[in-house]
View 1 (cartoon, rainbow, N blue to C red):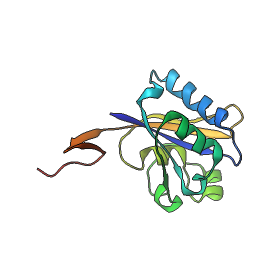
View 2: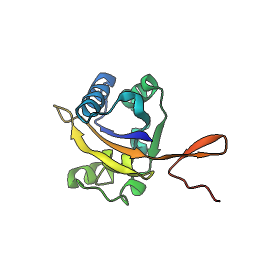
View 3: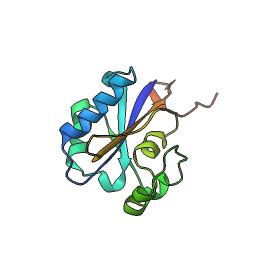
View 4: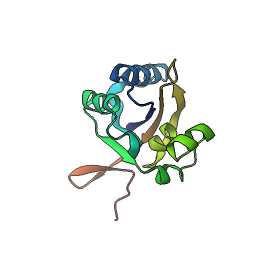
Length: 139
């Protein structure tokens, strides 16, 4: 099992703000940062320095999805405001769930609301010499 943390953020958000919300969210849910296997967000945030820096600090990949892909993911807390700005009614929850899995922690906002995150658990299957998230091997 591995955790996927979906992240949304305002332009120019700091790495400390992103990491702070992720760590607080995981701690309050009884989860560990060491379980995080991936950060995920919308394509428009692929170059956001604060998000990129946190993925590097955690040693995990940053996976991005097109807004149109995220808009197709059913989430418990869609936002019309986010939809108008980002082209999808959810970034954090949809990005966490886009590769499949179970939502463990719904969208959380930082104190100033500049960062959001959500946490999903994705099952990893042993396939040959490696692990593939969310895929079932043909038997």
